[in-house]
Image (cartoon, rainbow, N blue to C red; front, side, top):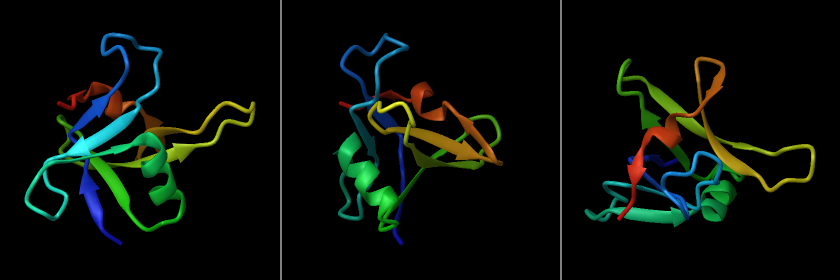
Length: 98
């Protein structure tokens, strides 16, 4: 399964702490150029186990894999990182994709 490092995110209003990520992106999609995909595409790839995505923690230099949270209250699924058995917000600390 191919793995891709996520180095940027897109939110409709970058300064908002309460908006969902709409896109994720990274430095090289295997074609020698940056990549960017929608949240829905990323969820499809992760749920189908055809691709995996990760961020590198700036402090520990460890990988934190991106997972899909499926809320039981009917809200739309969303992306979140998971490392060492704990869900965390490493994605939200990334800069905006251009």
